[in-house]
Amino acid sequence: MIEIQHNNDEKRGSFAAYVDGEQAGLMTYTWAGDTRFIIDHTEVEKAYNGKGVGKEMLYAAVSYARENGKKIIPLCPFAKANFQKHEELQDVMASQA
Image (cartoon, helix red, strand yellow):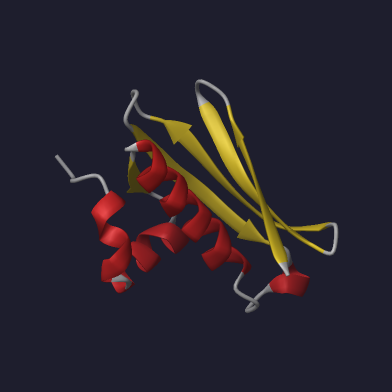
């Protein structure tokens, strides 16, 4: 089972994934004002590649955005590709100006 821990301060934050107590991945973001955050990096430990760790962190970010009325700017290639692929995530994607 994948456990996600969310860390957030006024400027930056992260969603860290753990499997059996071991850190399996990390997704970092930077705040862009009060209502939007930029997912700037996603990494998954090699041992956990292909096991849905990245997707779980992304879904945690999307849930956080929905629950708090925030929008996401997906800059990292992983997040950007998933937003383009999955229409059900696009309600929290910030419109590109």
